[in-house]
Amino acid sequence: MELNAQLAPFVKATIKNLKDMLGFEVNTGGMEPETDEFTSQGYTVLIGFTGGWKGRLILDMPRETAMKMASAMTGEPYSSAGDEEVLLSGAELGNIIGGNAITEINNSQPGLQIRLTPPSVFTGMGMTMFNARVNSSSLLIKTDVGPVKVNVAVEGAQ
Amino acid sequence: MDIKFINAFISGLLNVTGMLGLSDLKRSGLSKKERLEIDKDVNILLGMTGGMNGNIVLSMPEQTARNIASTMMGGMEIAVLDMMPKSALCELANMVAGNSVAGLDADSVSMSPPTLISGQNIVALVSLVETLVIDFTAAAGSVTMSIALEG
Image (tube, rainbow over all chains, first blue to last red):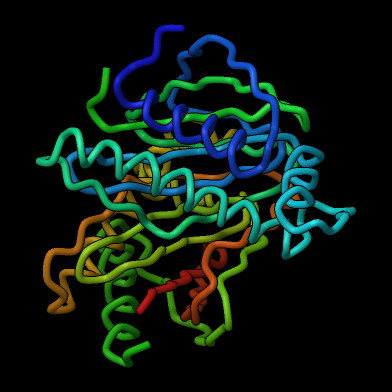
């Protein structure tokens, strides 16, 4: 598994939180390069970052996975990924994972001073996320409740 | 939210769209929501940190997105919302946010690069804070600008 410098801390934080906080079994696949357009599996948590790295983190999963993940966090069953609590759970998960990752990045590279923007959560049919002139890379993480894709785009990254 | 933000963002959008040839754009509504939720097909989202912390979203129907991109690209006909028009719309959001923030004396605001989210039947939750929603209408269609600033 060869991860680039931008993606690695976010993948590490995602795996840690899915394992420790939610108690899931996780398996990772390989890194996949993406173009400037990212196709969603149905449910996306998006967090921007500013500072030394300008870009965004996407945690993407099928709607079914999002509902099960929210259930694991709240203990309630859900029937729609558009349910407010499912959206809120995703935002919170994104905040925790993003926060862990940038804390690690900022500690190891103090000059970067990366900050997170508040998370947004989207669910819909045939969704794509487009960033002009920014290519991103993804890593697919397989969990008990389905696949979770971690995607990071940083301006000017290789 | 401070009243001074409202005018800065309204004139930010109108300045930029005027410059780009969408001079018939008029403000048609102003409201406040408890939280930022959107349900349009094309959304361009941009985050801010520093002196202001939050998100700005420009939302519009796909037809409007194609019309606006077409105007920005010198009247070129746009049949599909592909890479070029999407880049144009991202740039529009960048300019609107930059222009609006410049109109405020907020220090050191950093912006994350815009992301354009498109699809069908989108349900979104962008922010949990009080949100300012400003509607604009033009011949090209309607555009909604939502501004959610934290603390």
